[in-house]
Length: 112
Length: 110
Image (cartoon, rainbow over the protein chains, first blue to last red):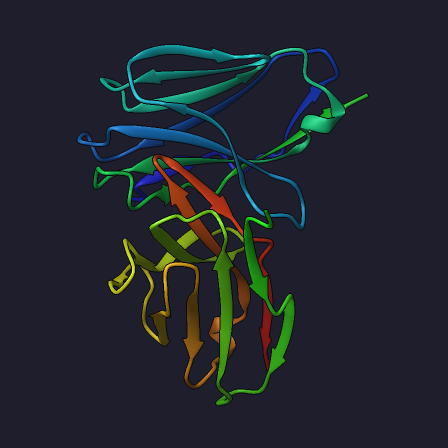
């Protein structure tokens, strides 16, 4: 079983809609969770981090964490074509922030 | 402030050849990382260095060696390249909980 799992997609949403990206993880002791965005041919960049159960909002992005169910999600409101990218979920399993385990990523396509 | 830089951008090797991928950061970060990214496999950690003078294995260290030359530089060496090492290699450095990635090196081993 993979430690961090994501649906590879592609997930297609119309412009202006809400995109919902999901991630599950296997290690219950995980403390820190991250969403990275990666445009095609580019390097990953951090867009959200979340450490506590519940929701964390930053502009059009909302990260949701449910440690009991071992899932973390990313909502993108008012999706724009510029949001089209692969979104990588990452989990700090060891603690201390030193080692991240990444999921394989979900490709998001925002269509006009 | 260039952030994390990597050289070369692209390299073709023949099986058995050796090469070193270079990485440097100008953000005064203690921790640095080497990942490889393959289709369908996501980013996998090869080696990391929590601080100058220390290195540790990640998930896929076989076939690689690293050197933390100083606080700025962290190199990755392939002693005898194999086709299975064809990949995109990313270097990253960390400040608190955020990892900053370099632009990547595309490596093709024939």
